[in-house]
Amino acid sequence: MASDLMEDKSKNPLIVSSIAGLWSTYMADSAAICMFQHYLKHVDMEETKDILQYALNLAEQHLEEIEDIFNRENIPVP
Image (cartoon, rainbow, N blue to C red; front, side, top):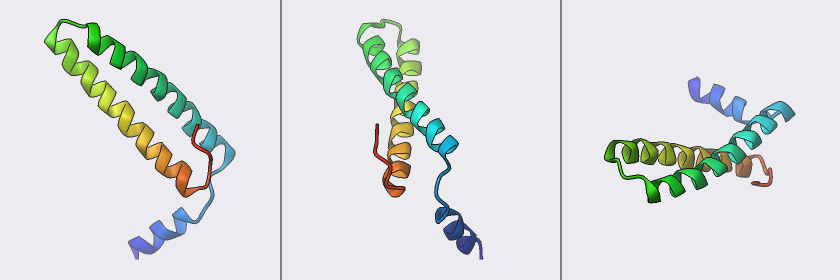
């Protein structure tokens, strides 16, 4: 029964506001990835490196998930 509900939800196309939100998040995380990579090359404090690495991994994961959604919905990836 629960899987039927999930299948029904996946058949509903994304609305424009959802696409816009995903697009904005994709662009922001893309920029953040560039900044985190730069900071990781220049930071000396190990604790700060750990935090930046965590943030970088999270942003990369967001991009992968959003790309999957865009591909599934046949929306061009930014």
